[in-house]
Structure formats: C-alpha cells, structure tokens
Length: 437
Image 1 (cartoon, one colour):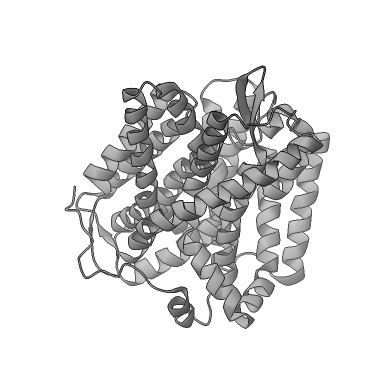
Image 2 (cartoon, one colour):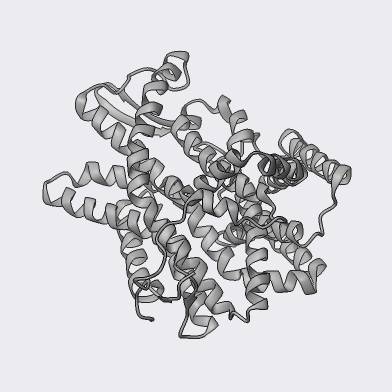
C-alpha cells in the first residue's frame, strides 16, 4: 500500500541514559513503569503456570489451573492485562493530543501504531512459519505444531489491543465531547453481551471481547484527561471497586479466578465478565492512586528510571517471545528424557519449576537480544503515511486482529492461516513509508 522502508539515516538505537536525560519534567513515569512491570509479570506468570509433565510415557501439557484450580487466588495478583489496557489508554490519549496539535490524520496515527506493534510480532510469525515448513519437511510437523500453538498462547491480547488501538482516535474524541454518553453506551452494550452469555445466546456475547477491554482503555483516557478523582478520593474509589469485585465472586455467579481455564461455567475472560471488569478497574484505580509515589521514586532514582526505560525498549519482545523460549526448553527436556513426572501443583512439582524458570530465562535473554532491535527500529522509525482513507485502515486493523486471533488458536490449521494472514497484511499493508523520528 505504501513503499517499504526505514530511511538509511534513521536512528537504530538510543541508549537508556540518553532517553532518561531527555525525559520531560511533567512525564507520568509510573505509566512506563507499569507497562514494563506488566510485561514481566505476564512472562513469569505464564512460566509458573505452564505444565509439561510425563504421564505413562506421554507428554501432558496445559495450564496449572486445569490441574489445580485451588491456585486461582494467584490470578488476583498476576492478571495484569486490565492494567496494561488502562495505561495503554493513558498513553494513547497523550499521543493523540500531540497528533492533533501537529495535524496528523487519524489514519496515519493508526497506521503508525499498528506498525510499531506489529514489527516485532511479524518476526515471531516468520519464525514459526519457517519452523512449521521445516518441521513438515523433516517429518516432525506434529511436534512443531504443538510448539507453535504453545508459543502463541499470549497473542489473544495483541488481537484485542489491535482493535482498541484502531478505535482510539474516535473513542478518545467521543470521550472528550460526550463522556457520559460513551461510558453509558459501553455499559449498556456490555450488559447485553453478559446477559446473552447467561442466556446461552450464540455470538452476541462475543461483543464483550471488544467492549470489555475497551472499557479499560476508556478508563485510561479518564486518567490522562484528569477526570479521575485524586488522593484519598481515588483510594476510596479503588477500595469500592475491590469490594464490588469480591462481592461479585462471593455472592454472584462468577468464579473467584481472573484467568480462563477448563471446567469453568462462567469464564472471567472469554469474553471479559462483569467480575473481571470490576477487578480490572479496582486494579487500575489502585495503580493510578499509587502513580504519584511511583513517579516521585523514579524521579529520585536515576538508575531505576534508566532500568524502566531499558525494560520498555524490549517489553514487547519479551512478551512475544517468552513462550517460545519456554517451548524450546520443554522440547529439549522432552527429547533428553528429563521432563518431570510429578503431579502438577504439588510441592515436588513446584521444586521442578526452579530449573525450568532459570532455563527459560537463559533462552529468552539471547532471543530478546537478537529480536529487540526490530522493536526498537519500529519505535524510532518515525510516523507512517497511510495512502488510503480511514475506512481502509480500520478494515486492515480488523483483518489483522482476526489473523492474530486465528494465530492463537489451539488448532494448527487455523494457526497456519493466522500466520499467513499476519505476514501478508504486514507485507502488503503495513510496511509503510516512514519518516525519521
């Protein structure tokens, strides 16, 4: 759609020290800290919850909660995706204000954000597409397919975030002009989807895949726009939502877990439920209440701020590749015959996690070192120019979201289609003309 290319003179790296020295005095540094911390939490949480054991000579894998649902309490700490959408809304609002001042078209803003998000994801897609082809050629397609499915577990987030990002120029504009109408409309649509879920009506509940996560982004708009209360009032608001979330899982029909797993009658996240919405807003408002203290700490500690900047420069790479690292470790352990045969969730099983966590990290670090420059070039490459109209970029974002959703499917045929769709959309739509930042 546009000619590829980062210009040859575009910057390819900037040190954390240089970026720290250029930080605006009024920057909400807590937003950067929360983003980096959330990505780290996701990686560690997935590694801790990943099950790969031997039973009667066969490999058995899955989610710890499938085997030991009593660990559901951990999800009240580790479910950080609402926080990520919340700080994403804050960041998008900040960027959109700047874009409006500079006269940037919504289509160009969306294309720029999609390019930055997808550049590191395309590297992962290319890796697994090649792996599947090679696996098929050497007669190991089945085992490579399992690896591809496992590595794509986190990608549901990217599919939803793609839609929210594409809608951001419009939802932010509506939020500023008619906040009550926008929020009221989202609440009504969410309630319709939730009611349809309880009534077992097909398809209609799926609207909450968009509406639920969009709600956290709009809350982030409110934070950036100064519409949230501050100080003790914000603490009280967060406490009220914690109380509502606890009431929902103790008095309502929702389970006291904030991640999806098998055997749940009402999933908290597939699609987002009322319980998750209350929990996510409580989590987000707590983070907003703590933000002034976190920002002051990052202003006092130059080292902590440099680490935060450096972590953000590789956050998406860590997020995208941490399950690939875990899959590689499990594959090597399986071939070497050293996978444990203990019952998941037991004390013995937790002891086996220690060497696997260390090995996962040992594989992830060189992987990230290799792929992070792709993420950093995308961030530093400047804005994209979209040659067609706004409708076409929204359609592209929708197709991209569907491709990523397919890529994260448990069925290898659907995964393959998702990989192909992601790569084709990147090649023919998102490899845009960019100007140096």
